[in-house]
Image 1 (cartoon, protein in one colour):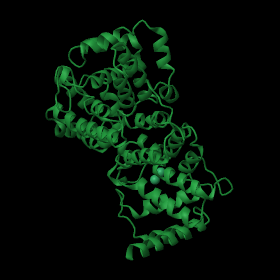
Image 2: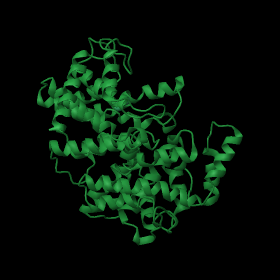
Image 3: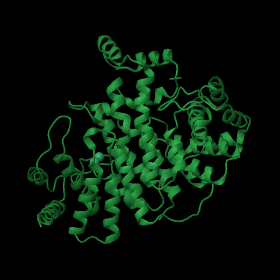
Image 4: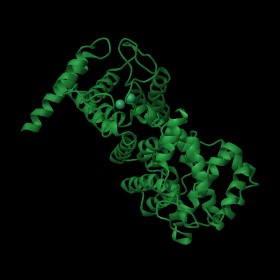
Length: 446
Ligand SMILES: [Fe+2]
Ligand SMILES: [Fe+2]
């Protein structure tokens, strides 16, 4: 088993997706935060808490995606990315931002109407979406047993030194020091990645004493001439972040801990859209049930369960304007959707000893006749475990409500699967699904 740091660092790429950030944003933020922590003389416990808070700082972000899409319309991933470049504590910048980001592809009239609808105290809107993400992120850190300091660092991530941040308007020293470090580190990373560290620090300087703790800012300024540090940050990704854990015990995760992390990321994925709540958990349970019915080896059944939990990780990179769309998707939108298993693969394959899970998870939209996506694999390329995952995924999709239709009852869904047996789905897996569902029904009735 890999270590907690290895797994969470790799999965942080999924959190970058949901925030519309370039790959490696959380990993690079983590390295910057640790450097600031070192310069500020944080103790061993704080450094360790800061590390995990930085990696998981955006774990609550899928929770506000649908809401942000509803407020602004358009691609909320772009909205999320753009908002990071403004000083949202200033009303004028908020109004300008709203005007530029509301229904960017809509007609002038539609944009104007939606913009008027959104008019209200910008701080109120910001508080609402920040509250959703910060509390959720803190709850996730707690659920993963990462300790109170890590959870509180995430909860107060968007508070500002002058008390004009979100969600509760904490001020000065009442903001946890780890949040003050992390808040500056994430902004510094975003600007440094785009404009370089010198310009980034110029932006931060203008927010010193308003957004940022002057002492933390002084630590950041001390890095300005450290060319080697910035080159290292720029070239770093999840592997470097995993290796940067301040006080590692190198203990491999226990299976139960691994399952808890996979289950948590399943919730993060499913929280992005109201139409996918519980989807990954159900797919995982169905895949495990089918695998057991087919007498698959225990370790393979276990991988099926984890692959089910993580199969749609890449959907965090699909905007809600597509996921929640009530109408038929356009071809460019379909292209975007077809990318998600590739993204799942890229994230999962980066984890040590996760290659089989990456393969199973990322083939859930492939078909026996080769007309699936993203690789267009065919019968001879697909293992039985991939076919199990496909059947589990499609069954749950068919029985769930979608923006454009109600969910089918289980019998009709099974008939639908049979109508494409041999072309799309392996009949062995459909039979096993039926047997598993029949047994589950009997067990429920008993
Ligand atoms: Fe999918
Ligand atoms: Fe799925």
